[in-house]
Length: 145
Image (cartoon, rainbow, N blue to C red; front, side, top):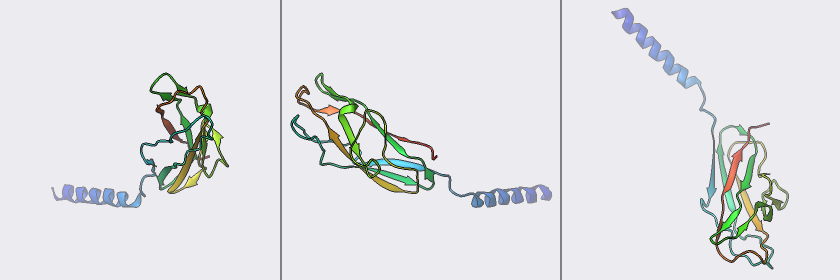
């Protein structure tokens, strides 16, 4: 019986030491500030640049690939909508405003935590109905290359 107890204690000690040797599991966490975002009010004769900035906060303890942003059409409460090709985004990576007709890389492959400020531009037309529009911004983390 003594032999069994000693073996169990050694096994537990080995598992405990093994747990100390392994580093923390890699993780990447993406959040936005604010969590809900309004672009503002625009008229068709304006340039449509939003004065507000959406900040993407990336918390990471490992190398990760670029973050790619895409957006759904903005749907009006009535029948109107604004397609992604009339929405542009600007980040430090994009070198000015870039159309969101296709997904846009808003960051590069990097290591660790950082923030990405995003600014938007809407191209309103005289045909757009007045009112509130809503859509979804999708952020996709790509693998490192």
